[in-house]
Length: 431
Image (tube, rainbow, N blue to C red; front, side, top):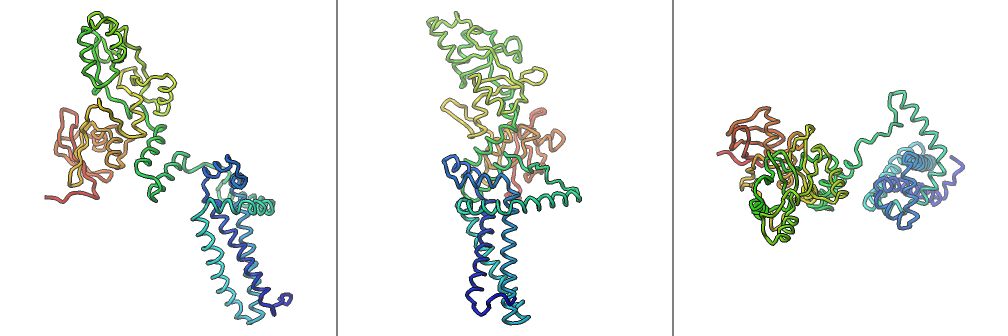
């Protein structure tokens, strides 16, 4: 192109450098904007940062943002390549095309792609804030063209049965949060205990009362039909402060006796337990469906200002009890105090295997051993083995599933009472 003054190489050099700088800006801006923390930007906007407000506004119309960046990036890249080619062809003839192709490929890849994107991916928030104002001008400049291209693309994709207007997220918000926490954990930014707490908090919507309740076969209850003296003795020997009262049959729960209320009443009668009316002291039982989600049950505990509820099935039969502590333990792990019973159920062995009581919940074992056994189909380890085996196995039988080997150690009637579990990637040597 004779119109360019090729006799002055500095003009050509400055034009190419300017185009490469614009290309680097667009590449870094795209990476920084897409990798920036939305939570961080919202926090900064709330603190009065105008650049963060611009970033959030641009991210609300992500398609238009990406479209404007791509248009600008391609325009300057093509312009720089075309100008360089015309200059080198005028200087070296047809061989200039080869020189221009090799030279511009190296320059664009190194200085306009890899370098700015590397900087942006390492400091995405700072990059997004830095490019926010000039990028908003670019988006406004190319806005009409971007809208036209978007409309054309949408109509073109519809011909192939793809409707991009159906903005259905592949992952839910909780799944995205969980994935982010897992990624930060792998990168060392979140400790294991914190990851488990985040996971437990996110699981509250998916778990039901039946998943964490104390089953009725393990409930410690007191018969209200026995003498008051015996009731007082049982309450004082119990490690729990709240105990269900039953009358007639253990399934007929008639109240919940609080140890503090009993002691106050006992003090009022000068310690004469025979004068106590235990049923009058007891609180009315609160029955909740065992299908209630833990998130809803937590809200119910907080609104009623109580910590104890009886879980019933669809027929109204008592299936167990749930406490506020049971739900909190799903978030923070096992909570113990000086009166808690020492529960033996998970016993790791030196060879990497684990002896487990059949009644141990799958979720508790996963927490204790950092395993990922499925807890959707069964609550306890014994239930998981029975579900996978499709039968009630006998002692000595061995099953392999989900990456673990399960050996039934003991069985009592139709209940599996003890198992040995071996992770297959750490299976002990035979013999």
